[in-house]
Length: 161
Image (cartoon, rainbow, N blue to C red; front, side):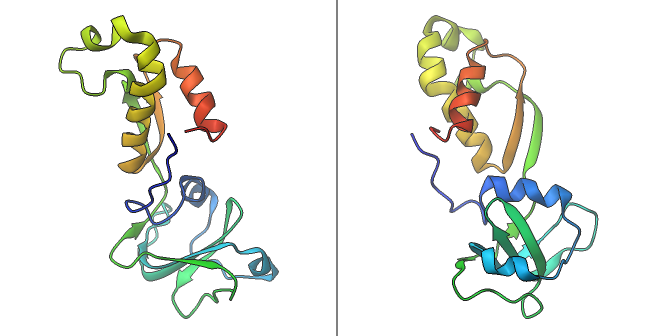
């Protein structure tokens, strides 16, 4: 299963995480030549406490955010892929410090999961991770799954999920 749907997000998760180290409204420089993605038209919340930027532009080069600002103030390179984010909010990924990815779909805790550990690792926990991502959580801390959650994490990090 590949996590390729992007209709709920205005940017890839890796780019969203980069917001945490970005100061608000940086101007593009020579780095603009490397820009591969421009997210335009959304309301940008940079996570620093600065006011939201309406009609914002976020320029991404590889896995780094290189510029953020209002439309018209940030030049979008001609060869950049443009992702329209009008009506959406572009912001850093959220962090959930208490999840149970192995209990997705269960109304009765471990009774659903424990007899099916192979299926939990193969299907249930990846589905729970995907649901978290679709809700805007780019980092979660699982506090109740067996050690197989590490295998799921590794599959995500390798790009298999």
